Length: 90
Image (tube, rainbow, N blue to C red):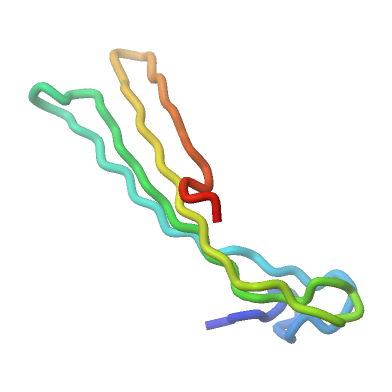
């Protein structure tokens, strides 16, 4: 686990250019038969650990997680979808 570490230098955000990337987990279910054929439902969670808030590392930001949702309908070659980012506004 690389919680709070820069993805380039693997150090806890010590220098300029340190990067912190979120971890994302998502799942999508598509119905292929029956009354719901063509419907797709999905959800995802994005997590980011606490990290330095400035280049001087004088403060850190809080860890956070957001939840996203999506719904889509496919009929033939056309698909229409709706996605909501940060569903719980955290």
